[in-house]
Length: 184
Image 1 (cartoon, helix red, strand yellow):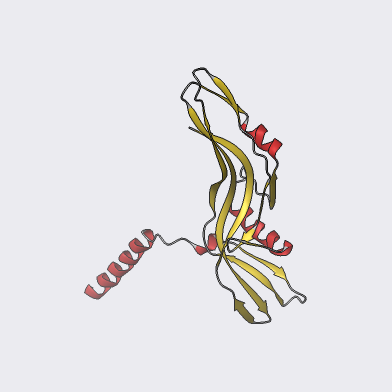
Image 2 (tube, rainbow, N blue to C red):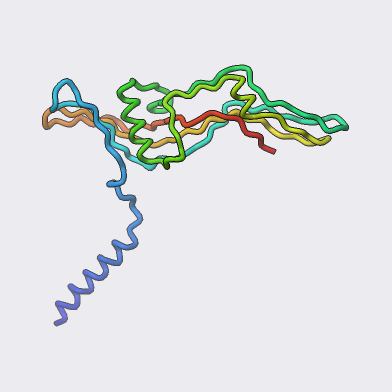
């Protein structure tokens, strides 16, 4: 009887520990593969971390009303900004790799968050997005040109028959949109 209660206690403890396990389930992470020249070879990208949405400031211009009257300020930028899907922080990826990484990113973000492999913003788009602001005397705001993107890490690997060759885990950046925001 005592031996049975210890076994039962061990089962209860194991079940309780399973409830408090905070390690992320890797089943939620996606793997996308591209077929190679034969059906038994190809390249895959295994997602190794959650997708995180971020906003990065590209340019910032302070707008300060130093006059004694209200004044209207316009926010516009003269150069364009281009962002592409990158692997490892700075290397642009091939079209086939880009499609695979976009699939991983799209599967992991909400449907209201649109992703774009190539986002470009011209000065006129920046002006429309930023618009104008009326500042009282002494008031100031900062006009920021921003782009939204998602980041996650992947580990690429190739397979041929039963042989798998793992690459190093790399960070992936997938652009979402470009815009302008005012910060006071």
